Image (cartoon, rainbow, N blue to C red; front, top):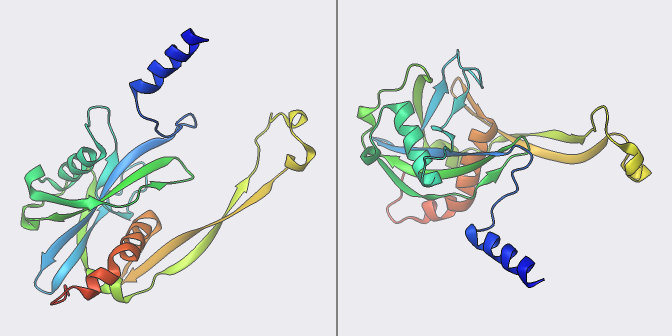
Length: 217
């Protein structure tokens, strides 16, 4: 037993506990980027290139998949933002990290909030970004999003060993629903995870921003 205990202790001490990734989960980092304009702070968005295989033409924040070479999720966030917007790390000031989001489809997303100090230096990568635009932070603070619900269904695929589970687990089961957020600004619809990041940001910070002496808007 002592040998077993020593082996397990050594293995546990090699790395801190993380998240079970056996279901092919993957991790990513995104930046919720703020820029200053004459009328106050704005949030900057990208429109993904139309020839991308994943979510072409959709509105999003800079970010991407965490790579082994990245020392941290913050490094991933800065690297991806620089690649997509043609910036240097010194052009980005990270203010902090929001709560991470574990999505039911796989990615575990680490969300950082930061300021792009020199937006005039942006040269978006044509292979990844069709367009960039900004929306006043004031708009989101004054606007409640529309919310839609999507059902989650537990439906085993062909070959599932029904003979090994109690009868009550046989067949399709509804597991509840998750919220999808939508903001409509002029002719744009900001929705999905991008809208959720904004909503979560405001849930955490809105009151403090409204109480800021001198205002931010």
